[in-house]
Length: 150
Image (cartoon, rainbow, N blue to C red):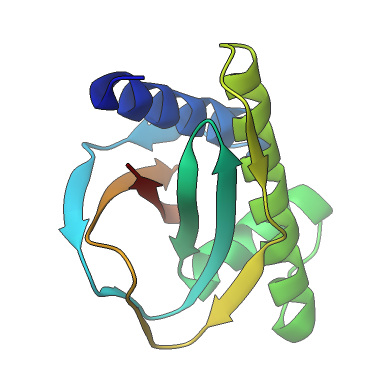
């Protein structure tokens, strides 16, 4: 499969997953290329992909953004371990939805269990990645970092 086709499928599947899972109006911003290290300041979820498309997905946002998403979906503010557990489940829902949308296009992927990363962190182990910022109205911005292995 050609790289441009893969990237288009991944970006479209990601946007569809966020639209399907979160109850907010979205403003999908222009994707950009990032180089290692990826630096986070708050909370992120790391999920691996295997199959027709291999790589990793990082879903990154501020604590405030994650708290607002959790509150809208569960009806109460989440903190501490409950917020971290929710973040893992949000990652599962987004990645699972992403995998399902790609399966509809005859592209099969499996996802790994989510790893939640909290605090200031630098991530290495990739050369380039795509950052897809998605603003959720009244909530904040999720940065979906797509590390696709070629």
